[in-house]
Image 1: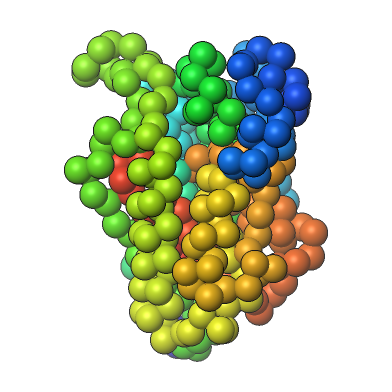
Image 2: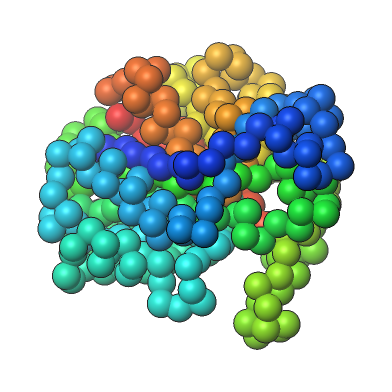
Length: 322
């Protein structure tokens, strides 16, 4: 028997305000046609002043706990992936912890931008496998609208706010049974200037704004994501033919299509929510996963691969059987 991390439940949360391309075009020099053609995005959600990374993360966490049938007091580990924390410190994970009424558990944030959720899942999986944790709440939550330059139409149209969460639990199972089968993470800091925020406490003392060289990011994304997907399949002794679903980071439709083609995956196996949510950074993978679980596409027993790449560059993948 092997101690594995199994998926017990998923949840997500979105800000109240939905913003279509047409509405965005009223304040930004752009158009619905321009955005759709280049990204596949039709809509995004923008947080108001009362909605924060921790409040969205808490709402997603509650939904995941309800789906799992797990009480908050059973959680002994919270990892929140975000590039837009409520405060420089303490960790937004501790604010979620307090909001859920959990008096004592391990709680911390992970910063790996769009790959953050995969990084957080990998850490939680390692802690569960080792016995350091039994039931983990893993959250991706972002309020990216706070760091966008609304004068830069090449970036501000791409992003939205939201949160997604999963509950992972320890289970003794036979090899090849349900649970996380493999995770693989990478980073290459040489590419900092291709996707970054031009501020920070130790450099400018300001929050800064997002900057990106889109075409170069696109090229790296397709290559890196296809490679890391193959890596987790090889680690688990699986083939691409056996994948039921791919839940990718929702950066833009062209990256999703190009990655699927590179792997020879049928487009209908790829979960796509970028059209409705835009790029929600660390929230995009768990948000898309929750959508597909709740609408019945992803079912118990399915072999699912999740993948993402973000600023840094960081990238990673996780293979899980539900």
